[in-house]
Image (tube, rainbow, N blue to C red):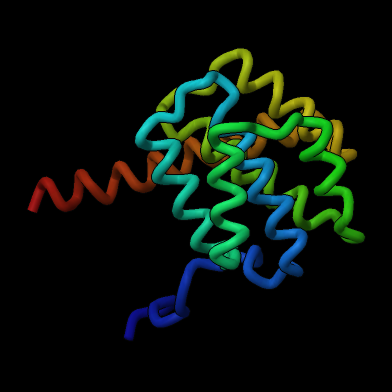
Length: 153
């Protein structure tokens, strides 16, 4: 076996959060999906993937999907995320909101401004948004290299 293989799933801690924190996390992602009133296929795929990782109950999933039609306010989302004593739910929500915002290949000015508001509303520096955007772009480049490897074979 090669070094590093067999380590299991990608490291993520979302599923370890209490259920109410996972719901608050998902609520923010529903808000992000509707920022520009247009949920792209890529954004929806990312949203559904993250919902799977959040391990929400069927009733909670239904409530979150309703937020796609009737989005909550940003202040409501931030208030719900502040229930976490260690701030982990908010940090993961910001990370994944950035991934969702970039899923269609661009982060427009409105999305970027909201991401900055989320970071500051959760007590983080604005620079974390730029750092996470760089991380997301590196990830997309990494995925693209995998496609190129497969296309070349």
